[in-house]
Image 1: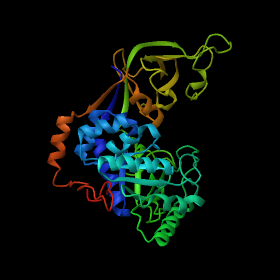
Image 2: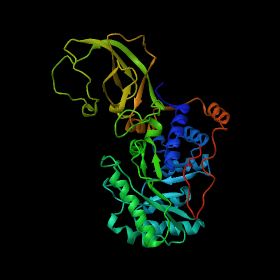
Image 3: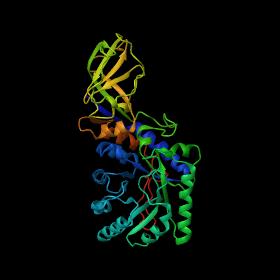
Image 4: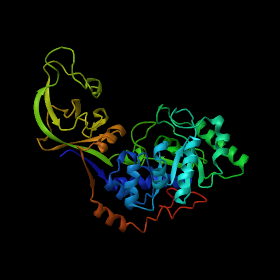
Length: 396
C-alpha cells in the first residue's frame, strides 16, 4: 500500500523545539496547517500536542479544525474575497488583510454575529504577493482602526513565499519602524508584528530577528524540519515527521539507458528529477516500479532514504527507482521510503489516491501525551477581544 506516514512523536518533538525558540524570543506563533489539507487525524494530534493557534488558507480545513477543537484560535491566511466574508468571520479569529473594503465587510459580518474580528494589515515588502504599499499605510490604518467590531491586531508581511527572496534584517526592521510610526501617530498599541515564517527561523537562530517581530506563522519547518535558507534541516528538528512509503510492484534487472537514440516523447519528460549520473549504453541494474506517479505528487520532490537508490523517471502513475547492482534484499511487496519537499508533500496530502496514516494511532498518542502532562501546559487560555488573541503562548 502506498501511504504517507505521519510520525506523531516526531511532530511533538518539532513542536516543542520550535515552541522553545518562540519562548526565548518572547514571541507567539501559529501552526500553518495548509499542507495537511484538513487531515482530521493530524489536526486531532495537534490538539493533543497543545497547538491551539492554527492557520489555514482553506475555510473547509478551518471548519474541520473547529469541529475537532471549538475553542481553537483560527487564522485565515489567504486574503479574503468578497464571497467568503461571513465564513471568515464565523470560522476564524484572525485574518490577513490588504483591502479597506474587505475589512469594512468583515466589520459588518462581525457586527451581525455580535463579535469582534481581528485583522493583521499586510504590507508589501518585496515578495510581490499580498500587501498594501508602505506609503499608504497611515491612511489605510486611519480608515479601519476605529471600526467597532474590528480589532487591528497588528501589521505583517509575507516574505519568501512568491518571489523567493530570502527575508532580511532590513525588511524586518522596516516593519518595526512602521509599528512605531502608527503607535506614535494614533496613540494606540499594536500587539503583533506577524512577519516570522519558516524562512525566518534561520535568522532567529542566529539572533538576527528584531525583538519587535513577535509573531510567527510556521508550517514547513514544523512538518519537514526544513532550513529554507541554508538547505538541509534546522538544528534540533527532525525531518522524519512525514514520509512516503511506496510499495514495489515490479523489481527486475534491466538496462539503465534507452536502447535507441531518439527524440523523447514522454509526456512528463520536463518534470523528471535531475539525473544523478549518466548510464552507459548496455549498462544494467535493478529497477523497482512503485505505484506513485506525477498524478499523485511532484516526483522531483521525492528523495529516497537509501542514498544508493535513485529515481530514474516517472509517468502519470508509475515511478521507476534504480536500486543499483544489488537489490539489497528488497522484493515485490516491500516498500521504499522517501523524504519529501513541501510541494511533493502538499500534492500527496491532497491526493485522494494516497493513504495517510498516523503513527502511533491517535488513541495511543493521546495516552502518551497525557503521561507528559506535567511537562505540558495549555498554550492558550482564551481570547481577549480587547487585547486580541494570544497565539501559541510560550509556556509549553
